[in-house]
Amino acid sequence: MPLQIIRNDITKMKVDAIVNAANNSLLGGGGVDGAIHRAAGKELLAECRTLGGCDTGKAKITRGYGLDAKYVIHTVGPIYEDGKQGEHELLESCYRESLALAKEYKCESVAFPLISAGVYGYPKAQAFRVAVDTVTEFLLENDMLVYIVLFGKEAFMVSEKLFADITEYIDDRYVERHTDKKLEKIRKCAVLGSVAKRANIESAICEASSAPEDLSSRLSQIDESFSQMLLRKIDERGITDSECYKRANIDRKLFSKIRKDVNYKPSKPTVIAFAIALKLTLAETEEMLKKAGFALSHSNKFDIIIEYFISKGIFDIFEINEVLFAFDQSLLGA
Image (cartoon, rainbow, N blue to C red):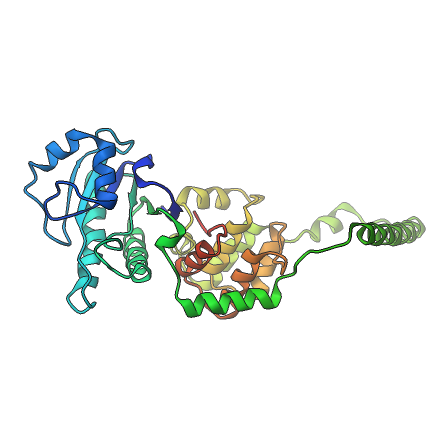
């Protein structure tokens, strides 16, 4: 199952479990912790009193009470000092312990906040990378829908250099459409006239032909479909189906549909997600997009960002999604 990065209020998430960034007492506090306790009601606090607190990097589970989630998994993140006091390992442990509890309680979906990135002072970009890396490692071996829930865009930023590089790349290629409507109408009329003339010529050539193509000849010219190309590329890369759809951040059920239906029509982000997973070149990506009826365009920021990463040979789908998120674009995969 895939990883999804979304903006939302975690207390509103309809999942099997939400994760609470708690303090050691588990008796409520500020930020996400306080919001979850307020939404769940007094029963949550009453059950937390029976748990005897929680060590940093560990996790404990309770019922969800007034929340839409069945369970609340409480984990205690590290307070960031200088990055040399084991903060990274403790933060990883928060995610691993929480996911292990979710798996033990047979949760199919779980939502995380960005642990320790608030008053505990963990640098947001670093906290986000720990979250993505740890969850991704878990999902390589387990089926679960995992959300990282960010309250707002300000909760996460890619590195300033990468953001600046991509902004420059977009500016150099982005086609702004500021067209005079009258001139546009004249241009369209000219194009249509040219198309009509060419169509008449082609019609005359066809009528002059004494030997029309037979059906078998026409059928032999049909190109492979998107799904056929995808499966061929998987075989050429020597990877398994599961490796491919997990790298693409694609749900196993969706991949199964694609495999079974030779004429499956995917969305554009799905095609690109598979291109990233297979580490296709820009030309190969364009070819795969054409199979599904799409193309990359310099009039689309989403497309330019994708082109940037492929041209740089960067195929980490979650790093790409971080940037797409920062530029308010649709994410790849899930």
